[in-house]
Image (cartoon, rainbow, N blue to C red; front, side, top):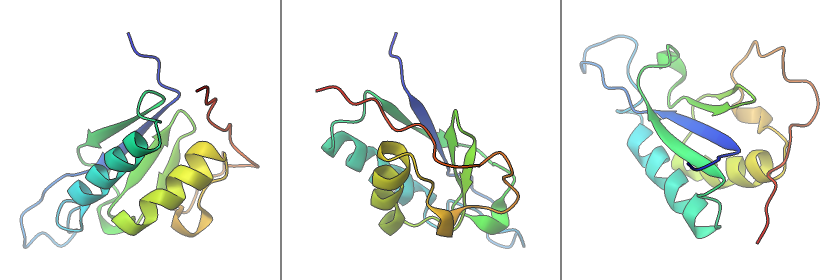
Length: 119
């Protein structure tokens, strides 16, 4: 069984076009997920970090919503252009991308564990 160091969940939930909350799918959730998978594979990190689809993460107004486990770091308004920064700064470097963080994450104090990359 694979042993991942991180799981990154990308909301791809779809709501009706007239829903006032909107939805991550219409804001580019699938593109964010696909870019994440491509960039992880390109960097040789796909066996360390698992990119997952997520249903609704109850942060619709903040979409595209991305959450990284095990640290429980929540990002909002993520675009495909943000993916490389999340990978390099957070997943590899252990520093959350502060400009994308959703508010009210008091558990985030200091740096996070960096990936243990062995090649």
